[in-house]
Amino acid sequence: MMNGKPVIIVAAMDRKRGIGYKGQLPWRKMPADFRRFRELTIDNPVVVGRKTFESYGSKPLPRRSHFVVSRRSDYQPPDVVSAGSVESAIRMASFAECHHVSVIGGSEIFREALDRGFIDRMYLTRIESEFDADVFFPECQEDDWELDSEDYFPKDGDPHACTVFGYVRRENMS
Image (cartoon, rainbow, N blue to C red; front, side, top):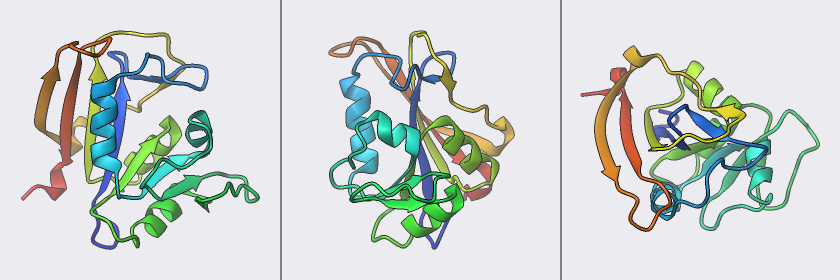
């Protein structure tokens, strides 16, 4: 927790942990996953890497303050807060009036947040297919995490079935 606020990861990946391909998501739109993402992030600050932010048009998502991590000190797109590190972005975001801070990507941001122990909870959607991917969700130390929810969603209106996993960091369990 940072300033008493939980820090969560919200991510989607394919069966091989693929999260990106040529600067975009590897799969077509998944309305069910988009709804879940929106529900988890709306009215809460998001921490996002520059490349991921630029992949969705360099415009903040509605009703979410954006803390964009970039090594470039001159990087300052409109309506976002720029940060030079994941830790700095999470720390600044944690001062917002919110329930939690959401880390939404990309791979390098996820890896650093996990490696540095900043993450309290993860909501990971596994798209039940495999795609061409050149960016992957990092491996996690399984001993650090406890699966506390698992929900399967059939294709229905989506092009692929998916499973949503909720994990809590073991040291945070009561």
